Image 1 (tube, rainbow, N blue to C red):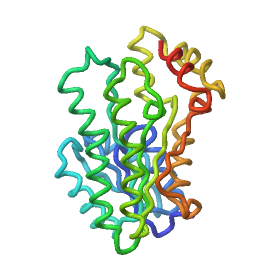
Image 2 (cartoon, one colour):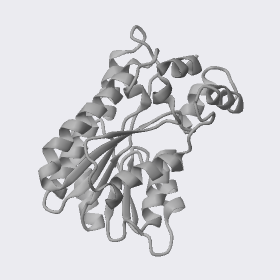
Image 3 (cartoon, rainbow, N blue to C red):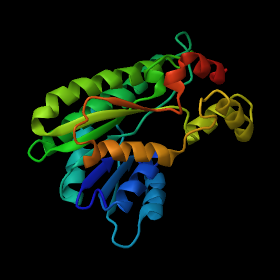
Image 4 (cartoon, helix red, strand yellow):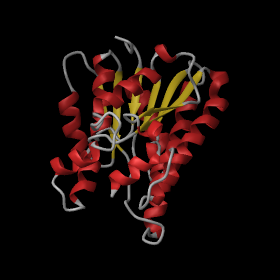
Amino acid sequence: MRFEGKAALVTGGTSRIGTAVAELFLADGARVMITDMDAERGAKAIAALAGPGRTVEFFAADLRDHSVCDAIVEAGVSRLGGLDILVNNAGVLYRRGTLETSDEQWLEAMAVNLNAVFFMCRAAARAMKETGGAIVNISSEFGVFAVDEAISYCTTKAAVVQLTKAVALDLARFGIRVNAIAPGKIHTNSLESSITERSLSVDEGVARISRFVPLHRLGRPDEIAKAIAFLASEDASFITGTTLAADGGDSAAGPGGVIEAAE
């Protein structure tokens, strides 16, 4: 029960990774609030996560509106009785290159993948500064090295790595630790969508991509959740300002394999 008595807020909480994080926090004793734009998906997620002795809440939120970030934290503090952990998991991915990316796609990626991370960090820090806390931001292996046809995603996820360092330094004096996770190829809905967009079956695409991961498989959402929980827990009490790669060895091998796998 690493998080007994703790209150945690998870953005993008209806995604496979988001629900895996919420489930792990709840199982370890935390009170949890998740966010998503879609209230219907939120209701389904809450129904799946609910259980005896669990406190789990949903807040419908569009993170493209920066003023909403303050409202999310205020709701979390009110409903959960405080805030100890923030996981910035919401994100958008457009598989578009420099010439194909529209103004709207670029601005939306900036709004969700980067601006909202800053606004959520700032709002959470205001709630945590008297008691301390932990923030975990979700970057990507594409924030460590670039790939083709993902210009807005690569740029914003790289910015999250640097933002994490800067915010960690600003908030260290308040006892607030700020770290990031850089997932690799994880079996998520968005990965399945990118496979089917290439006219492949999911099984065929998963098998093809797995060949280029040093561990020869995709990661699971629960494995990313465990890495996030580590950084949010007291087990990581002397860790701040770092980005942990959870990519099956991709970043050790270098970008060549990732580029090849994406083709």
